[in-house]
Amino acid sequence: MDWTALIEKALEGMQHAYAPYSGFRVGAALLAKSGKIYTGCNVESCAYTPTCCAERTALVKAVSEGEREFSGLAVVSSGGADGEYTSPCGVCRQMLFEFCPPKMPVVLAKSKQHYRVVSLGELLPLGFGPAQLGKEGPSCE
Image 1 (cartoon, helix red, strand yellow):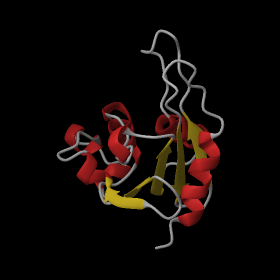
Image 2 (cartoon, one colour; image 1 turned 60 degrees about the horizontal axis):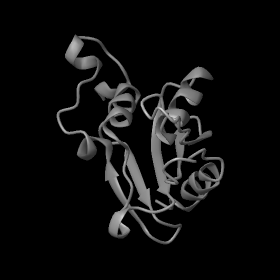
Image 3 (cartoon, rainbow, N blue to C red; image 1 turned 90 degrees about the horizontal axis):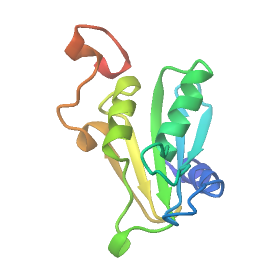
Image 4 (cartoon, rainbow, N blue to C red; image 1 turned 45 degrees about the horizontal axis):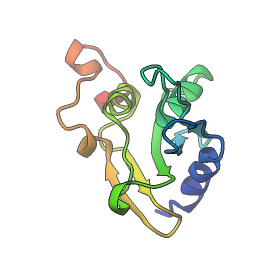
């Protein structure tokens, strides 16, 4: 699959990041099964704990507008340690697992040309989702 458009949207989202303390800017673009793309950026707080990651920003934006099914996510950042790709944090992985199937592709990108595709299940093996509570939900696929 060509992930260029999704990566481009994540790069656009990163431009809105509010990261005055860490300087670590992150953008995310979440592709809904409807075809609509929801972007997000990180928004820091000087207290750090209430900081909201780009991935959760995109997810909450999509869910608040009625989306419940997703087919891909791209994550970009202004730079990682030793040129590594930036992946979603543990809290974001858990939130994504609530709505996204383990097989959903997650594109970790440095640019439109340099990216790596992994699944949500690879990022959160043995994830805790609706199925563990005996409920059906998007991550039960």
